[in-house]
Length: 69
Image (cartoon, rainbow, N blue to C red; front, top):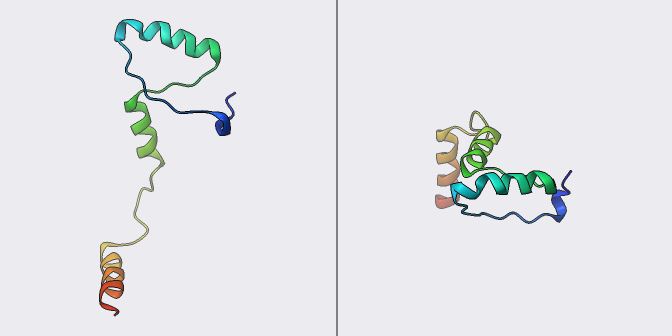
């Protein structure tokens, strides 16, 4: 298992013809890999389903800060 504190994230553009070889190396070294699409999907799933503030509450905050109301 990877120690997240001691890892470096990288982004590689790999030719599709080399992807099978790279996946094999990733598996042998115990690394983790995910595609850009998988990363985006993981990010979207981690976001809150509903906003914690309504649009009206946000506008009230903006007005209060901007106009001191």
